[in-house]
Image (cartoon, rainbow, N blue to C red):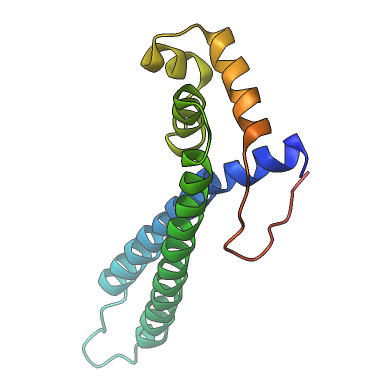
Length: 147
């Protein structure tokens, strides 16, 4: 596996977290629309309102998003476990700490340097060496590298 493929493999966890956030935002938006639709379309006495279908559609959409979120949470956890196992197998504590900070915690280089009390150039060197030393044992189905 190439260096770029390993980096893409490591980045899957942060992407999975972004996917979770996106689904949570969709759920909030649908709930908000459902609540405003319910208030705006209250049946008028003696009138024939069809707001039930809109509410039902919102409920179906909410159910669908909740299901997708559950699947995403399971996938995120599996990805995190895989990546952390690969990181923990590295020979150097510095390499483990750098990859943990960069790919699990999502810290930029300068924050990683501050956390570990080393220079940014050391972070980059340790990261490069760690990625090269990384042994990937894939527990999940193969991933696609997006270019």
